[in-house]
Length: 100
Image (cartoon, rainbow, N blue to C red; front, side, top):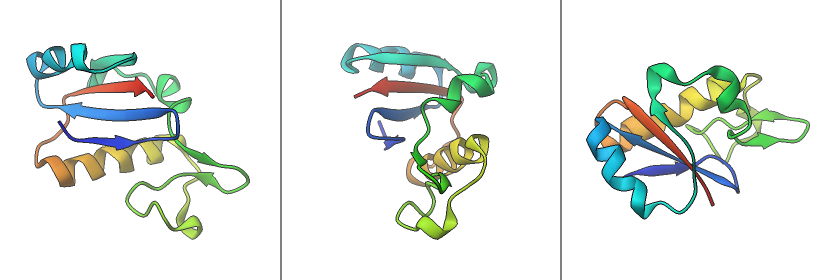
């Protein structure tokens, strides 16, 4: 179960099917969002992605570079999914966000 830390308060998990997401839920402390990727609304994601004050949103493909921040929270969430795809080897069909 690979995940990426979105901010100091939230962690994103990606799953290939509903059953694997559902079986992982009892092991995750506080679930704030668990949906199919196609069902996730843009406004739901905005409060979970990391933001650098005065700079923009975090680019998860280059997290240590403050020069490459993103203006859009949508692009920030997409880079988080791309990072999970690189580590998992499968595309996310279901996502889960945990409050840490």
